[in-house]
Length: 83
Image 1 (cartoon, rainbow, N blue to C red):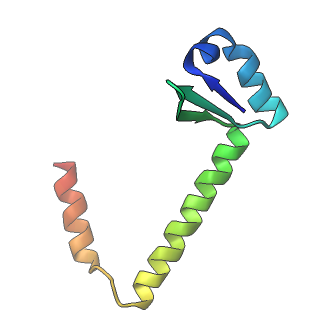
Image 2 (image 1 turned 30 degrees about the vertical axis):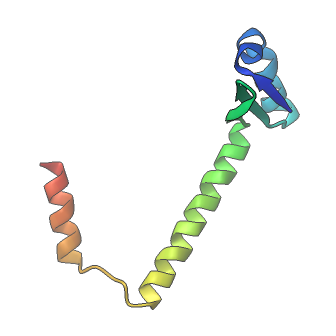
């Protein structure tokens, strides 16, 4: 389902309930183009878990390919960021 930004403003409570309890995913459009999505917290958590799994897989592949960074370099970069 999709709604415009103005429809979202007018029916926010209803739309949030449909997403939270009805497990719907709602695309918000602006001038007829998709702009954002409203998803349940469960869907957000699943998406974040998938992103973490992908990052772990990519890190493992980089490690296997020998693309590692020495620990001293990592510590120095972290210390530099802290100022």
